[in-house]
Length: 469
Ligand SMILES: *[C@@H]1O[C@H](CO)[C@@H](O)[C@H](O)[C@H]1NC(C)=O
Ligand SMILES: *[C@@H]1O[C@H](CO)[C@@H](O)[C@H](O)[C@H]1NC(C)=O
Ligand SMILES: *[C@@H]1O[C@H](CO)[C@@H](O)[C@H](O)[C@H]1NC(C)=O
Ligand SMILES: *[C@@H]1O[C@H](CO)[C@@H](O)[C@H](O)[C@H]1NC(C)=O
Ligand SMILES: *[C@@H]1O[C@H](CO)[C@@H](O)[C@H](O)[C@H]1NC(C)=O
Ligand SMILES: *[C@@H]1O[C@H](CO)[C@@H](O)[C@H](O)[C@H]1NC(C)=O
Ligand SMILES: *[C@@H]1O[C@H](CO)[C@@H](O)[C@H](O)[C@H]1NC(C)=O
Image 1 (tube, rainbow, N blue to C red):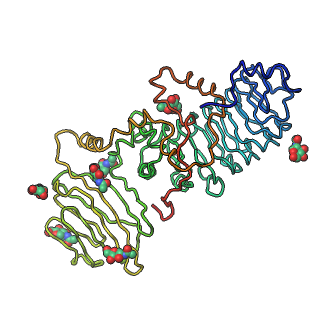
Image 2: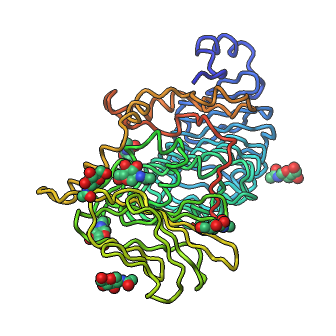
Image 3: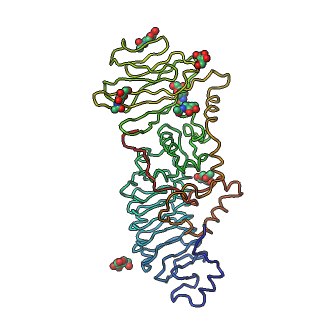
């Protein structure tokens, strides 16, 4: 986090004081095309600001209001820093004729509702910082015209709803970072989230919200986990959800997935084949029924199961129970359901059902991971959680703690440099850390996305939401 804009206070004084620009306000420092009026106790925008400025730093002041067209006479303005002020809202037209803005920092203010007129006309805006405000609501059209947006930071607010629906491939082709962590979202419109462009999903941060555990939620994170998204790897422990909305029973669901064992998640393989995957845990001796529900809905399907213990189980009859195989312990029903009446530990493993629609030459498969456990004296849940817990590697803890900002990105061929995060005042970042963190230990766990550069971006995902998973 080095910044070319901070050559050190002394140097700035030496360079600037002797022959400062004609209209540099006395409380500001003007250097080349940069004007810094930070920490100057300002309650109002200085009257005349150098019209050729590209960067204007007004952070750490007491500004609470800006008039329409405040930056009218700064046609070259690209970077505007308003962090650590007292804004609770922005009036209409504040950024009128400031359409050259590329970086706008409004973090650490008191904004409550992000209204849809706030950023109107800022079609060149690439980076929008709104973290650490008091935002409860982001209006639907807010991000509408921001077609150049690359990164948007909304973390550390009180947002309950976010207009995911307004972000689509054609509307935001460059968006690779959307930080919504540490907010108050409990139920997300998962269908809208799944419809987000692949790059946005990869750069979406949702940890430390108030998510309620349910299968729709789990299924989305399961897919992201499968794709090894940075957001999940870097914040594994911060991904929590509460059972039945009870905040006291919160689960680190990327580590302990036991609660979701009855959930069905769909694994998109190369279309048209779709795999539904789920986990079933039973006690030895119990009966288990595995359905073969797939994306195929034709009435004339034939089913084949491959099982770890009994090999292939087939049946071709349709609507005819008599042709179903029926050994004493295993039955295959006409609807494809496989029933194992007395499970043994040896029945554990992956069961794969293939449903074939011969007429349309379509196959679809369903996978069920069956775990047969011996009845234990302890409670069922504990036993299961331990089982799951053991399968989770502890390595990711280490990765999380000692992760360096640049990993795989280095090996990839160089791409045009993303706008460095350091373009905003590093002192603002330090002060967030110092106000919200009391000790070094906490600093590790309170690591905040906004302070990290994502290392990967330009990669699409193979996950096609289309095809209904
Ligand atoms: C905004 O810019 C346009 C042309 O770029 C100009 O005609 C108009 O007067 C400007 N508006 C204000 C309020 O300065
Ligand atoms: C989680 O969010 C709360 C505010 O919602 C914040 O106070 C806390 O520091 C965050 N914790 C982490 C680990 O980010
Ligand atoms: C999962 O399903 C089993 C049997 O259908 C049920 O007893 C159990 O309570 C379910 N678990 C959860 C977490 O819903
Ligand atoms: C298989 O046989 C058992 C009894 O042996 C019977 O209860 C069950 O309904 C049969 N299943 C099918 C699919 O015929
Ligand atoms: C499970 O399989 C092992 C080896 O394949 C065998 O020795 C054992 O008897 C089996 N157990 C049951 C309950 O079928
Ligand atoms: C569907 O599965 C059957 C056997 O299970 C196989 O013979 C056939 O080639 C498969 N068809 C497609 C389109 O994958
Ligand atoms: C099935 O579940 C067990 C434990 O729950 C796990 O170790 C195994 O990797 C899973 N298998 C598959 C194919 O998901």
